[in-house]
Image 1: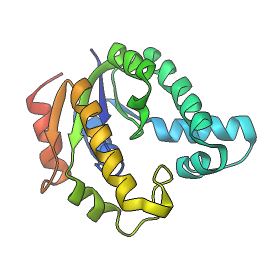
Image 2: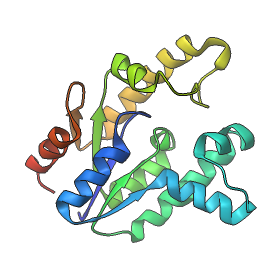
Image 3: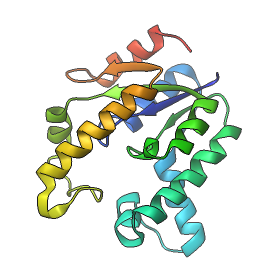
Length: 173
């Protein structure tokens, strides 16, 4: 398979690792969140980030838009693809992604994810009234989904981007 698809939590490094990996492999880089944002702009003529789309339009709308982006990936070849943290929540997305390439899970501990996201707003998918409980539940649910579908699991805690890229390269395509 010609594509390497990075999966994992928000702040796990999918975009940063993806850009570095694509450079190392001399492959194109595609971030599905950026494509979702572009598609939303094309539909509405309104520029919004993914978290803003999620908040303003709701989860169902956001996931439907994301699913359309993922369906189009079957035409993408020889690329490194960074996905949104929740894209594997829909099983149809998993089916399309598995057809497109190898799924590499950037496994990051809850503590590390919190540290990386501490200066950012509460993610749109968390319950702002009970963010800590919501975070714990989401982490446990998604971690098992990522582990279930990953072709390769890479631990990211305590590693710099180049170390993660080297580890992925060791496993080849």
